[in-house]
Length: 371
Ligand code: FE2
Image 1 (cartoon, helix red, strand yellow):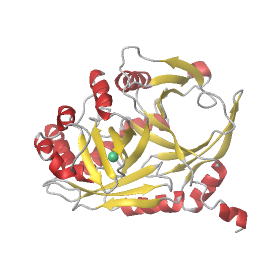
Image 2 (image 1 turned 30 degrees about the vertical axis):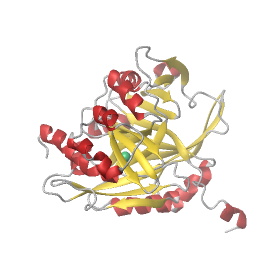
Image 3 (image 1 turned 45 degrees about the vertical axis):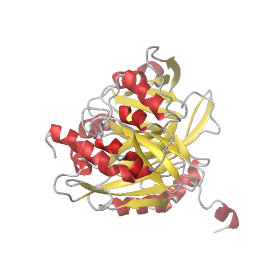
């Protein structure tokens, strides 16, 4: 290996989120939901009108967040099959890199399955380079290199700006982390995958002693890039008295996939108020949680009543504290949901809240008769 190659030994050292693509049954209606409930603006579109014959895609943005919603126009292509198997869900966690070829070569050398070799796509706005590898389940990662591209999103898309005037803006900023649920005993394998393929290191891990209630349990391990921009917690189910919420996800999703996307805000109370105004529903938390809150996490800037009223959760580590809340599932199957998170110094993922969260999720599971 040459010195030059060694100097660039981790081409994934400076990655960031690029977009998250959902495969859905009806992209037009899903786009309206994410715009009206979550305050996204539509900026681009691809479909038959733009020369794409087999699918439609809407690109939605808010601050640094970018989501793509794609639906098939065919009865039996890969998109339609994905939706038939998994329901609406996350297909692609795309990440921005400085050099797609170097990133893809490192990934394949690390054992990743390549689904698309580095490919240049062009239009009058310039050149965009991409490559795709497989990860857990039917989920993929596309590497995107945008330094030669000045268009709104990508070749094949046209600028198409819409927003919903009556939707309150929740001030969602960027992705904090994106969690995968994998099958029994597969957590270590996928943690090793992100170490070998992305050069990620393990930030933290929890076992079922940390994350369990009387009935349900899980194991979790968080993999991160060196700058802590892109963080992938990986969950697997663990044995409890009854079915783990991770197992419920695997049953409904028909395999491994993205469980939740955590989105950062600078003011969680204002964000929750805007989302609630827009009709978004959140998981409830037992009232007793707030009676014991200051005892558990110490002094915080927010009034406990402000948090109690909105069911916001709090956790602390040695660096500070964080506030978080979870939405109900975003589609018919109880699979993908969002977390809204505000960090005040802490790097925590809410370990101290798992128990409180689990009690709350189990109440929802009980209603569905799957506990
Ligand atoms: Fe999370």
